[in-house]
Image (cartoon, rainbow, N blue to C red; front, side, top):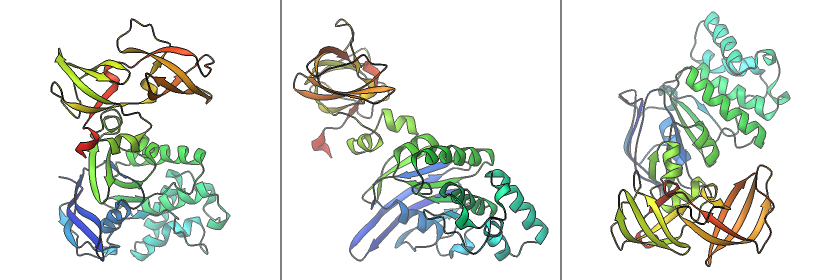
Length: 358
């Protein structure tokens, strides 16, 4: 049985629809991400699950129980907010125990739970410190500990890392996944940060205009997106238009701006027929500069720009008039005007519907 089922949930503010009949199921122990741009409805959906906003239509079922009409305090869905929402006049331990006192748990149980949560988030030595004396990363840990202490049916997280710097975000997303997996927690996590979703989530629901466009595992979303929006939101890519010349032995041969390219058909979002016009997706890391001209899918390029990024070099290439981007690891120095042969492996190209199909 799913831990959370969102069934046909819709919401509008006035005449402006925010959610359009959303369906979503979250399994026990799963880290489910809602990913999308600002205004796509992901935070509204999270707040509907929490009971902070009432849906116009549809239902929320938690652990097999319809909680659609219940207030937040009756749903057992602790939430970590973007701004942490900590009590500034209380110390770390008092913030964590606040919700437990409201539940009127025995004092010994509260003390035991607070100590356990402080250890889980690595804040035991800061128990007596006021929250306004903590760094942003430490405050985020306290907010997480406070939510974990309530032992909810599902943990809700609303952009919890957006106020942290890049180094702390990397650290805390690893910690959140570790804690959730060690404690077998179910979580629904809202973010607009694709790296956060790809590195932490078990599955990701990509949202746009109040609807889920695609729901899948991170690797599948990244390598085999179902549409151009998902492909572009998950990472940098180029999208040449291509005509299918023929199908043979599990591959499609396409006519593209840079020449003929073979594409493996297994697992593709679109299975083309001869003469179909499709959009191909090519990620920069899939482009192999300096390839033998006899290699599969090889084509000539001219370097237009080269940017040294440390571990990689970002190249802007002219491939017979089509602008293509490449990330080349351990690259030799490339100069504008240099001529190269590049290639893209047949299994590194995704086939998407043509632009005019969306």
